[in-house]
Image 1 (tube, one colour):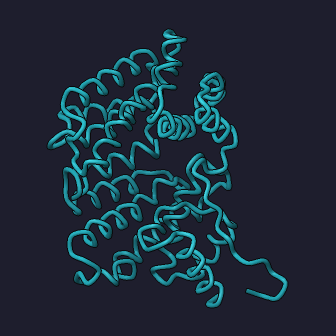
Image 2 (image 1 turned 90 degrees about the vertical axis):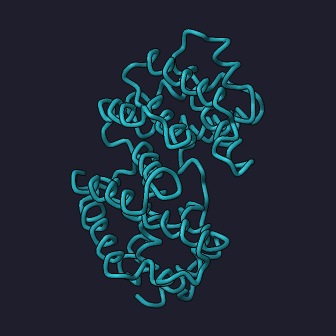
Length: 316
């Protein structure tokens, strides 16, 4: 730190600077749903932001009856049904996480959530969000839901670049769920091959690498073969540079709903891979904006990212 400069203090904001979303989540916390219709209506056809908002609203409503109250009060509002569907999906995931068992919600509850998602898709036929919900819950079925590929095609018809859908699909084909490390990396590379310059989908390569790291760490421990060089192998560095060249070099400077989260994935990869010039650029771009993931997988996220900030700044 240079004399007179302020210390680096990362700021963690789950909404990723979406003030309207933050206010809506505060309303949910005090038992109010009345602001939700306007929030989702005002989002329009910005599908990435709509997906981001619905998913974070559902995280808040999953432990309440707010989604049901809104749907009951306005049964003809398709947005109410879309939120209720994603809420049911996240409730199933909450049960699975609490029990340490993907099937903890039970077949009947999983099937009910799927039916709610399909009703939401019928009520809002151009909306990709119900299909994101379906791609999410598909993982909880033993072997994956048989309709996963169909749901993926339906999603792509509505919003082929949906960030959250691609992240859910990548997890689905990972070794943790219904695929292998190979199928996961193949999926990520196929996406990058076909994505447009400037697209944040290029960061799926780093999302995949983090998922492999987590999986191996949990099963093999931190002394697993080559795990300490996981981010600095020739392949890892080539992937990081590819994401940089595809996305950052061609970025239009307009922040999309989840760009802050995706820049944090890439920032971590540049730090851990020793690409300090690129890391310094991303630290400057993000200022103090941070997300818990990926840093939380290496310790307290604020401590980890601050340590990397000191290392990078001293080296550039």
